Image (cartoon, rainbow, N blue to C red):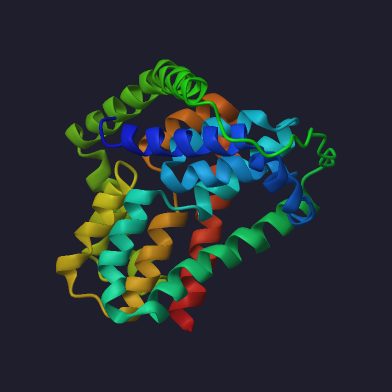
Length: 281
């Protein structure tokens, strides 16, 4: 939680500034046409931006969307293709030494997945995305005290809403570790990791740990001596295959168990397809 709060603070501060300055509604309107093609309206850009800091507030941010269909699409896209800031930093450390081209492969792949998966979900899920109705206020300089008060209220709300579920998720993972269930999962997943994804068997441990902390999982790839191709595949797969335990706990609360199960199946299938294609390429 202590590692998440700085990102929460920074993004809620920036979000509050964008709201009070009058820019955020304009940003939603600017991207509305593109977002509608993905089954969500322009204000869905807010949870996407929050997800870049931490996926937990990104998942909570889907509450601003009007329909259950929109919230499902937005949460699924964010959990699959939007890496948190801690993971982005680790990917830069792992792949960045190979130059901007290698980083472009990782983040370009995630952006393509975000677009294509959104198009698929929009055409396969029943329902429509409502039009965006938002007042466009004039530009103004934010009132500092009001900005701080809004920031404090949102952080307090985040702590009350998210922390209990985060702690529950961490407890469950620790119990699974103690019962050696995670080790068992790792042995089962080994043929898939080495066969379809082209990663060494030692990478299974990193993928399992990624459910707890994705940035730590990326760091565990460093001593494995991976090739550039394997590093790119591993970075993309770690982002896509499943949310960290904190995000998972919040998404279960926001989407419900049934929709979270559907979202998880989409994540796993998309990860195997994209990882397999990258391995073939």
